[in-house]
Amino acid sequence: MTESPKLQVQQASIRNWRIWLNTLGPVLGLLLVYGLFAVIAPASFRSGRNLEMIARQTTIVGVAALGMTLVIISGGIDLSVGSVVALSTIVIAWLLERAGSGPLLAVLGGVAAAALFGALSGVLITRLKVVPFIVTLGMMLVVRGAAKGIGQEQKIDVDPVRLKWLEELLASVPRDRWWMLVPPGVWIMLLLAVAAAVLLRYTRLGRHIFAIGSNEQTARLCGVAVERVKLLVYTLCAGAAGLAGVMQFSRLTVGDPTVAVGLELDVIAAVVIGGGSFSGGEGTILGTMVGALIMTVIASGCTQMGLPNWVQEIITGAIIITAVALDRLRHRHGL
Image (cartoon, rainbow, N blue to C red; front, side):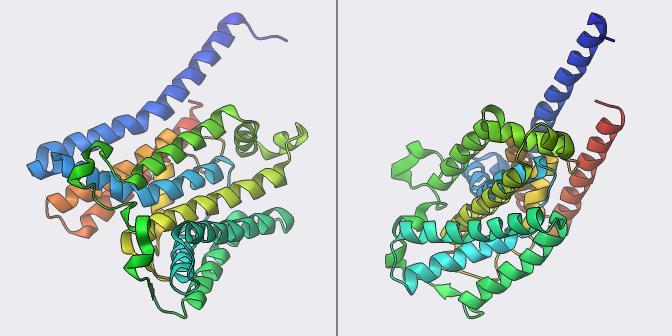
């Protein structure tokens, strides 16, 4: 029995409304949060220098959240992101200081080490059929332990001469380079975001990621190589976390196996606030970037107003709960 043209129009209208809601909701939330702080916070909050600082502080979480978006859309989760960031910093520092490698080789080594552990998580999830929560929870400890082992439970300091361009990735833009507007690391994040958005929207892999998150069994029956896609998704997620580790190293200029503890919660929160659903099949790169910005704007606004850190945590937690609750309500009412 075929559907009536009127019913088809109504269903198309609901789908379009849902797409617009998922896309514009986080953006409106960002504008609301920024506008609120612009009114009640000191004038320094609205300064160009503070806007640049917000962009710099968003980069680490934003880069890692790009990979997490792919995982959550596919219906999974990755709790090892913070540990992978720490591993990346320690590998980069070790290669620079103790192996005498150049900056580019050190960066490639850090990202490759991160991606390797992501691939291992993917293999355990797909071959052993263990739920992603348990695998990545265990991997969080394994990777953190590996980072501590490489650094012998200490930080690895790097001679500033060896850093070269690495320390400039998230450094404040010098006056003679005002035309850059923001540091190179922020531009790298934006380019990666565009690449991830193109991957999700215009490639077969992107369509398969959404298909698996929406209904894994249906995707399998349609010929999607589910295990292969999941393996690639977790590898890409860890690789993105490795790049976030590069940004973290640029900020600290030291390899630290204890850094980024709890960062995975910020990364997951950015995806959820941006419209990603734990049920899978939903999420956008734009929403994720906006979600990361919302958390940074809240942090900056609270700091400018002299509010304690616990106030920031309460506000961020309330926003996360609200975002998840709205997602549940949308699914319940079919919006």
